[in-house]
Image (cartoon, rainbow, N blue to C red; front, side, top):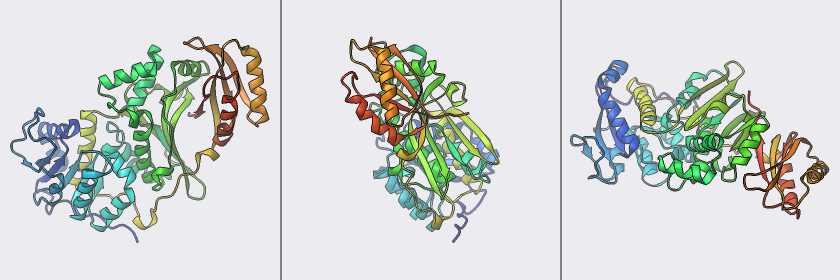
Length: 444
């Protein structure tokens, strides 16, 4: 059974398209400002008026810097789903569960189109939402959920829709990229740069979603579902960046690499999918290595389209509000695509276990005091060789903290091989702490 076309969101293509917005934080107020400032432009581009008629947020009295006096206020956001004057529900509350999930579910059941920036909701409940969208012929659009400042969803869903992509991925989180960029350019420690990111509003008080990879994982899961097929989110391998030091960044640079937090998915034979999020060494000459600060970048590759990369700011009021409105404009024009495609063929599959995947690896091993580094370097080469891990390059240096460190670059081995050798190295009397292993991703 093929998905049917979704209904338009209004009985008349010339009647106003009426929005109900749940969540009046930075993005929600940004959407209202954009609509008011670009009223004529939006009407010219869609052929109809776009207006906000109702809103919902936790605090009715808070000063948000915009006039809300003419809008209907709902204390319960779910009421937007049943408001007869609302054509499109715009969900900007966030969170995979709770009020956001209830609102989106009820809106789709009511046959209302939904636009959301909620990456966690779409990534974790994609199958349920796809069926509701299909069953009730209610479009669900989520361009702002992935790298708000760049049209990542449209690129994968529409720009290269005719090509069977073989690979997609890139820098999907601006906060982690800002931290790594600042560490590389200033030599400051991770904790120091993280605090600056929090002070500037790039990172939350609890930064774990950004620096532990979960924000990027939600985005990658969505892109993978569109490009290949839906995946079981919990099977996606995710590793964070907390252990990376400025020493690692400098040593990677000496080897001709930069360290970036990547999210990558590949199509494998027999309808399998590889997908992971982790910090990697990438060639310093590669395009992604030039993407710095809070910028995101997405690269797709297919047999016909070849490699295509887009880059831009991944968050903030302006870029995210613009991405939300891109979806609203599609709805105003009468466009409403099925969530993933053929609903009956899109049961989620688990990702290929990353332990089976081979690549080169960067290893950082810190030695205890008074150890002959040159002799130890030779010993480590032998130990790894006995475990069938060949070393391509190796050297030693003194870290910023004064410790002697061995830096090794292996030839291609599996992650299982690396996971097997790390405990052996850690138990050696001459090794201090847990060695660090980072994947080398050889990008063009």
